[in-house]
Image (tube, rainbow, N blue to C red; front, side):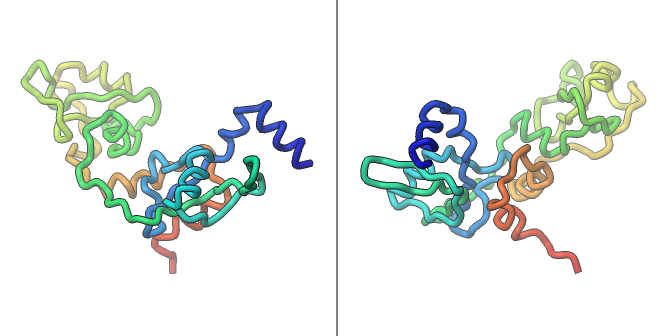
Length: 194
C-alpha cells in the first residue's frame, strides 16, 4: 500500500498541492486570515527539517526520503514570533476587503471595481479616504460626477483601515477549502457566545 501511495504522489503532482499546511505565528494565531496563511506541504516539511516550526496537526498521508518517513503537516507553528505589520498597503484587494467585497453605493457583491468619490477630473486623489468598492453599474452611473450631482449616497464613508481591522474582516471570508484540523486554530480567538 505504501508503494502505491508513493507512486500516486509521483504520478500526480497536483495531488501534492492538496495538502497545504496552515501556518501559525508563535502565539498560535494565523499569520493572516485573508489570504489564509498557507504553505505547500513541501515548505512545511522543509521548515520542520530546519527546526523553524513545530508540527501541531498532521494529515494521514506520509512522504518518504531514502532514510526518513514523515506524515505531512497540516498545521505548523513558528518557533519565533513574527511581528504583524502595522501599515496596511493600499491595494485593490485590501480596498475590497475593507469594504467587505460590497458596492458602497448599492450593496451588490458581484462585478466589483473601484470608484473615486471625488472624481479625479475634479481633483480627487487615489487614497483610502477617496476610493471605494463599487459595482460596474454604479460606477458607470456615477461616472465623473460628484455624489450630489449623481444623487448617490455612500453606505460607509471611506477611511484608512487598521491592520487588525483588516485581519478581523478577513476572518469573515474563509477560503473554499478548510481542513478540519485547522478549525481549532482559525477561530480560537473569536468571542464566545454566552
